[in-house]
Image (cartoon, rainbow, N blue to C red):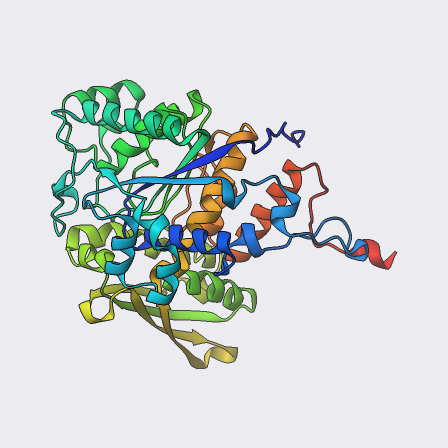
Length: 437
């Protein structure tokens, strides 16, 4: 095992850049501001409310995560971002209708001061949106440079010492593998030539990594999951992570499926359908954008259940996923799951789940944790893919030739053991036989 890293202190202010300042981003910002004032609790955030066991159970050492690792203080965070619409964070939050007026009004002045910069936006990747607050540079290479200037200016003007970025923008159309993704040289040539395979999210990622800003991808877009970006991140010593925030239905799958597998209960079918009415729902109403999300959602069960290892239990599993745009529902998403399971002697049973959730309420703590943990990774000298943050993603990125780990409980153990190792503490295996010697 490698020795623990040398960890730099979280001195100064941290700039959190948010490409895409819609419902998720505005809910995240408002929640952090509320936590600062003591008028809102950051429920769902591992960094703020989670604990971590250290040493043996008999030692009774269970500090809060934020007291164990040197994370950035919430009072020393500056918010910045880009969006295709010019409204400030207060107006965005009002329009999103995620948070009630009683929670927004005490934060109004601070939210109004947070205004998005003009966005990089190529509508062919998100056809249902029509942005007006957009950059007009002639080439994608020039777009990268414009974003880099935004980053440098923001850091300087806000007096920040470090920065991270978390993509909170829309799901883009499905992209097939392209030679332009293969190397740094091919990608930069593609930027100059306005190659159609290079999407808006990739331009943001490229600009951030060029500026040595860690980048976490909250969408299923390829974005940072291409060879050229992996190479650039390694060369520039920049952490990257993704992809696709694990919020509603997939969160339920990664909780339920490991339990069913652990008890060796068979599964014949798993049907999932969603209704939602926010901007994300509108974008996903386009079949090309839905395909990107569908692939992200479908992967979890296959990796958790291992049908090749357990062919009798999961070899003929039928898995179907549907997303339906329903404007009256807004950000309140409803996910229905029907699971046909098989028990002793082949007898059939069923599980039905009706999860009424608020998409942005579930995503906001993920944004906070990723921002703080990516900054921690940067200060620890980690670079490239941060697989230990798989806990937060539907379709986790991994090193080449590795399959992703989707089991939520294994992901949680991986995350906490990484924190223990980083701080020079003993890893927890849960073996426990030492208590009975």
